[in-house]
Length: 115
Length: 115
Image (cartoon, each protein chain N blue to C red):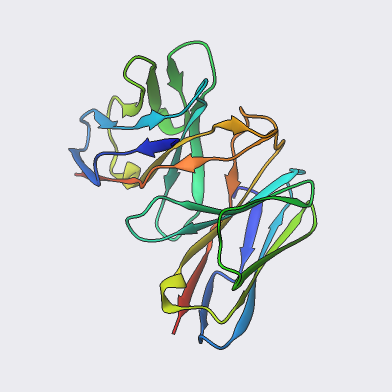
């Protein structure tokens, strides 16, 4: 696999629940990303962390709260979500946030369903 | 605005025939271009990238892509398609700004290879 692990793989939650998605990378990378993938839409970049610092929040609603305790781990905390938030959430990492030539490595994603 | 367009939602090709998946981009400055593939229930896997140099880039699984600056295109190609190539393909561009970088993806093209 790619060295980026996401858990859980599937999650069903009610609109009043609080849950968290976890991402872990074993590649020694310094940049980590959250993407949202919805059917027939481009991947939407949500958040970027470089060296544990958030460097981009792409106008994401506050019901999504990221956390990056160290360069290897990234969380996405979820609360009071809406049904339209149902999607595949992908985590990615890359070696050097300033290296434009470096490709990103993706996890397998968490399929989230909000009921 | 910086963007990536994949004009075809789906491409159908017979096994053994050549395939092309189209991608055009709009970005200021030098483009750094990538192709990723996504198999069902999996994350994105890196296929190939163009940074500089030869316009024809070779990647994994026999895929190649041709960078055409005048047409702002980066089409993915393979001389002989396999049924196992059936998947969702994403083109991405990396603009560089503010000291860090992010990938901007197209909406994806589903490739169906028929026996």
